[in-house]
Length: 303
Image 1: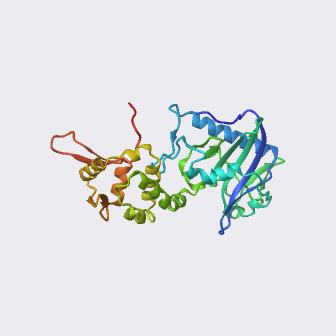
Image 2: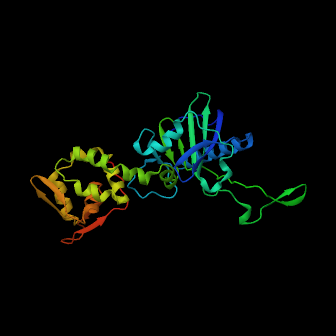
Image 3: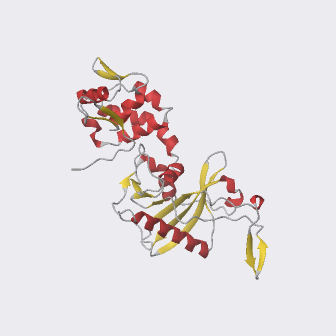
């Protein structure tokens, strides 16, 4: 996958941080000198280089998958799950707050926004971990000045070696899925999207009663993630009712049919969602001894 940006010809570098003051999260710009800008550019290049080590190319980010700590994934920038980072990427005028780092504990991320010669934008973001202020109350830092060791009395911030994600005009390129989910506030966003996802899936599966699933998923993040995944699958609309009931029965999910509607027994909501998300299956390698399994990861095999 290509990057819709020319890293060799950067014309503008804008640094900023995400602040959470307890009343909400905001993104602000912070002035930095040329040396810091150069260091940020090196971080962006290191991030893209790390992504290119995945020889098979990126897989699409799936909210229901348990992704690795470092794994190159992508998500179209127009996807609903990308709304938070997309808003930052597309923001035209961020407030410039030189004192934004005065309270390091309120910083939840930092970012850089670049422009190339074609005026294309690239945004890179990192969850603030080691970037948090190294305060003098936590110990003494020293540096060499005029061949003498001196204690550093100022607050010191440490940049990371790379970013968690890059955003161009087409995609969010994700190096650390957990960083993307944190920055995008995905857990709450996915819970909030339960009603809309249920409504969309109902149109494809008119023969399923989803009221119980809806209530269950509002308070169970994993179920809400499965709903988001199911909604994004093209084949959901082609699911056959009889085949669905057979798979539920063979994998231990209790359902019944009443007045043409498939209803899910209480306590089997998660199992039913695992069936719809292609995560429950049965194998028959030993004669007359069927085995039921739950897939921790779902990747379609082509061919």
